[in-house]
Image 1 (cartoon, rainbow, N blue to C red):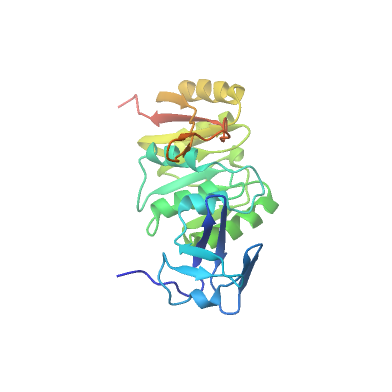
Image 2: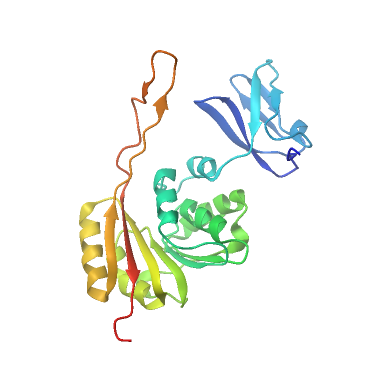
Length: 259
């Protein structure tokens, strides 16, 4: 049975590969595009995957948005972490439903929302951010993603300490992650993972040295590249323009040496 669209749901309106709109379905709401106006209220009760016509007769397909859609179309207070990096981070954290995760900083809240969607409904993400204006943007993005109930936003400087303890993962996306490595080691459960995302290799070097100093093992750093293929009969080729360097991702595992 097809899932139907309800009032308040977010949907992705697909015109073609380059033109997609993430919108919320509500009575009386419309979307204005260069291809005509789409009545969003008329989508209530319709199944995902259906087609709707604009006022100009253009056909839009209505699909359920993915986490990648929410990430790429989030309101931005800061540079976001791209889906290619988000997925790789998740796969290396050893967290899931019911996990407790500490994150710093919140930024636009994209990583926060992805983590929350992974640990909900029993789990929780504790996200530290010193810039209050960033938290306001992040809150809107988290509400849009439907995960705000599983996040605790904290307008605090994580360099001064992490209030939580016995957590399942620590994820850092901040300018000076090496200053938090000791705090991360203290609050992590034994055997669990800390991850750090940094745009420059100098940040990585300082962070890795500090991780090894405090006792993390299996410390390793990656850079992810993703290239879409343009598939056309007789002229299939790689996409000419790609998102290149975004950042380096470093992981390490906490161990206890004095047992």
